[in-house]
Image (cartoon, rainbow, N blue to C red; front, side):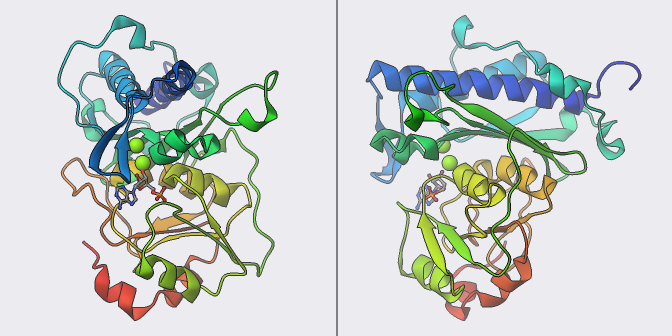
Length: 309
Ligand code: AMP
Ligand code: MG
Ligand code: MG
């Protein structure tokens, strides 16, 4: 590699460290015992102090280094000065050392859209299902997810004191995915991962239509993609609106980097341009392999109920 790293690599290197900081914030808030829970649209749509502080930290830190980015975060927060101790200036050296895929080497700050879910799996966070929680930072260019960082702040929490808490995974289609060991569910076995807290009849009808050998109900969009890439699930099936672009951008980039796909229930791609609708209205279907099989099993009732954009 010659010269200084490409802009997008510097951005991913920052996003990695910023996601680690956000994860540390989530751990600190949990430890304090004062979660500061607010209901947004209802009891199944929560925000905590961790969501608020993590988003402030992520957005302010990235804007300070990359002021021309478009950053879209989940939480609606009052515009106020962010405390200096929330600012993270570090960058992952490992990422700075990687060579940038040629197609991304000339990208400019103002062409990139960053989708931020400061805490995915908030409901599970408040219920103590801590490994369901992730911090998601996705980077999009021309509507496509081109890089994603997933921090899992409480990874290993069940091992107790002494274990290193938390990990960060990242990926870039065309470059690869890092921070975990890719594993697949044995061929022919269908393990479907779906929501645990946002289910309804259409959601369960669709899961059953996949003829799964096993169903796992876990929280978080980020966490369900982790289940896919670590060989615990073969498909993530969510036949409902409710999941948003900040839930899927980073996970999609990591999944695609290892050969997977994330689409709506019709098999159509989502776009991540700055002006798109936030809601993934036509549901989420994600797989590491055999995407077409799962698309082919989606019932008519779902296809009619959830129209592609
Ligand atoms: P889940 O699989 O239920 O954990 O949802 C994955 C992501 O989508 C989380 O960020 C949820 O908050 C969000 N989500 C899914 N369904 C809904 C809904 N009905 N209302 C609000 N958020 C939702
Ligand atoms: Mg989320
Ligand atoms: Mg969230």
